[in-house]
Image 1 (tube, rainbow, N blue to C red):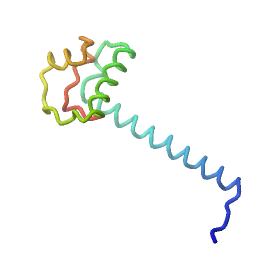
Image 2 (image 1 turned 135 degrees about the vertical axis):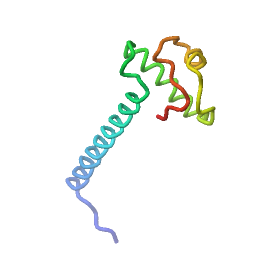
Image 3 (image 1 turned 180 degrees about the vertical axis):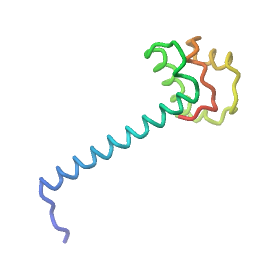
Length: 97
Protein backbone atom coordinates (compact mmCIF):
# COMPACT_ATOMS: atom_id res chain seq x y z
CA UNK A 1 0.00 0.00 0.00
CA UNK A 2 1.27 3.48 -0.84
CA UNK A 3 2.50 5.62 2.00
CA UNK A 4 0.25 8.58 2.77
CA UNK A 5 1.91 11.93 2.33
CA UNK A 6 1.47 14.48 5.03
CA UNK A 7 0.04 17.95 4.51
CA UNK A 8 3.41 19.70 4.74
CA UNK A 9 4.84 17.55 1.95
CA UNK A 10 1.87 18.27 -0.29
CA UNK A 11 2.08 22.02 0.39
CA UNK A 12 5.80 21.99 -0.34
CA UNK A 13 5.13 20.22 -3.64
CA UNK A 14 2.43 22.76 -4.52
CA UNK A 15 4.86 25.62 -3.84
CA UNK A 16 7.51 23.96 -5.98
CA UNK A 17 5.02 23.51 -8.83
CA UNK A 18 3.94 27.17 -8.54
CA UNK A 19 7.59 28.19 -8.81
CA UNK A 20 8.09 25.96 -11.85
CA UNK A 21 4.98 27.43 -13.46
CA UNK A 22 6.14 31.01 -12.85
CA UNK A 23 9.56 30.22 -14.32
CA UNK A 24 7.97 28.59 -17.36
CA UNK A 25 5.66 31.58 -17.91
CA UNK A 26 8.62 33.96 -17.62
CA UNK A 27 10.58 31.98 -20.26
CA UNK A 28 7.58 32.07 -22.61
CA UNK A 29 7.09 35.80 -22.03
CA UNK A 30 10.73 36.41 -22.99
CA UNK A 31 10.34 34.20 -26.07
CA UNK A 32 7.18 36.00 -27.21
CA UNK A 33 8.86 39.36 -26.53
CA UNK A 34 11.79 38.40 -28.75
CA UNK A 35 9.40 37.33 -31.50
CA UNK A 36 7.47 40.61 -31.15
CA UNK A 37 10.75 42.50 -31.49
CA UNK A 38 11.69 40.55 -34.64
CA UNK A 39 8.24 41.31 -36.07
CA UNK A 40 8.81 45.03 -35.51
CA UNK A 41 6.19 45.53 -32.82
CA UNK A 42 8.59 47.49 -30.61
CA UNK A 43 8.77 50.23 -33.23
CA UNK A 44 5.02 50.82 -33.39
CA UNK A 45 3.12 53.64 -31.75
CA UNK A 46 0.23 51.50 -30.49
CA UNK A 47 -1.60 51.40 -27.21
CA UNK A 48 -1.40 48.33 -25.01
CA UNK A 49 -5.16 47.95 -25.44
CA UNK A 50 -4.95 47.89 -29.26
CA UNK A 51 -1.97 45.55 -29.26
CA UNK A 52 -3.66 43.21 -26.79
CA UNK A 53 -6.79 43.17 -28.97
CA UNK A 54 -4.77 42.36 -32.11
CA UNK A 55 -2.82 39.61 -30.35
CA UNK A 56 -6.02 38.18 -28.86
CA UNK A 57 -7.50 37.99 -32.37
CA UNK A 58 -4.33 36.29 -33.60
CA UNK A 59 -4.48 33.75 -30.77
CA UNK A 60 -8.15 33.04 -31.52
CA UNK A 61 -7.31 32.47 -35.17
CA UNK A 62 -4.70 29.86 -34.22
CA UNK A 63 -7.01 28.19 -31.69
CA UNK A 64 -9.68 27.76 -34.36
CA UNK A 65 -7.25 25.86 -36.57
CA UNK A 66 -6.88 28.67 -39.08
CA UNK A 67 -3.09 28.44 -38.74
CA UNK A 68 -3.04 26.56 -42.05
CA UNK A 69 -3.53 29.87 -43.88
CA UNK A 70 -0.85 31.08 -46.31
CA UNK A 71 2.48 31.84 -44.66
CA UNK A 72 2.70 35.31 -46.24
CA UNK A 73 -0.11 37.85 -46.17
CA UNK A 74 0.32 41.34 -47.55
CA UNK A 75 -0.03 44.02 -44.83
CA UNK A 76 -3.28 45.62 -46.13
CA UNK A 77 -5.03 42.23 -46.05
CA UNK A 78 -3.75 41.56 -42.54
CA UNK A 79 -4.96 44.99 -41.35
CA UNK A 80 -8.45 44.43 -42.74
CA UNK A 81 -8.60 40.94 -41.17
CA UNK A 82 -7.83 42.26 -37.70
CA UNK A 83 -10.33 45.07 -38.10
CA UNK A 84 -8.36 47.57 -36.05
CA UNK A 85 -6.79 49.29 -39.03
CA UNK A 86 -3.71 50.25 -37.01
CA UNK A 87 -0.13 49.26 -37.69
CA UNK A 88 -0.28 46.88 -34.73
CA UNK A 89 -2.92 44.79 -36.44
CA UNK A 90 -0.66 44.13 -39.41
CA UNK A 91 0.46 40.75 -38.14
CA UNK A 92 0.92 38.12 -40.79
CA UNK A 93 0.20 34.43 -40.56
CA UNK A 94 3.96 33.81 -40.69
CA UNK A 95 4.33 35.15 -37.15
CA UNK A 96 4.24 32.25 -34.73
CA UNK A 97 2.75 32.64 -31.30
